[in-house]
Image (cartoon, rainbow, N blue to C red; front, side):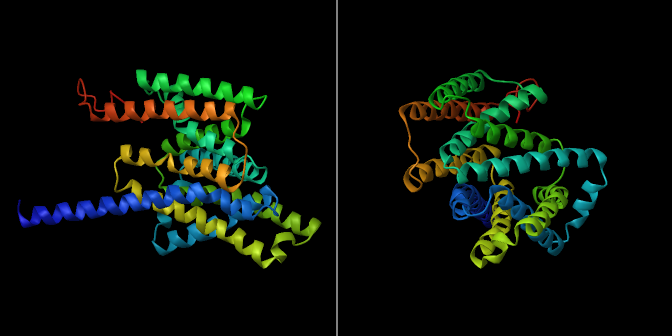
Length: 315
């Protein structure tokens, strides 16, 4: 092997390692978000989301300005089709954020974990229904197992796991709308928060006028609220960095880090009870994800048939 080849291989290995650490950082941060929002228990969930929108807008805007990427924002704002998709994704993002924070606030982190474990399977179902993506036998089996798990969970909590389903479907459809528009992750988040900003600021002003400064008068709570912006943005930046340096299959393996973190926090840090019915539901979801991941990896390794490189599996 020539010196140039060895040098190129070494650079590629270093890039992959950096991508792995970035992916771990992103999903690890998402997995620890319940800790941040538990520290904000004294603040109403809607107010937490208002601040998350405001400070994410400020920080991501500053980053885009510093990196001279505002042209991407202007391009998105100048395209009616792109703007419609981003507006839809903005509403779904707000729903997802609010459901997450409300669940943490109300001691339902196990339902958060369950929701994000089933999210990849929901995304597959959405892709099949709306994008015409083909469903392999393994993915079909994984979806059936997941449906059984949801049904069992429903019997255990005497009703549908609404938080889990809200998180899974809101994030699944969020991914669908973001997939259908050619806008980068950071510019996309900036436009989403820009769309949500007027409503967020109006609520913030109304709250201060009618109820007083509230958490704004508490330096500790205010600092935590401001930190929700950098936490959101840093996780996104790390994920974008990782996605450019790792294969999709590798990135896909990391998506279970966050709900695993939620699960461990719920049991060992927040003391949420794990009944037998819930344990069976989680066990079935883990089985379905093993089937799902193994099938995905198998199809990615198979050569394309009939000249269509995406015929075996589309994502």
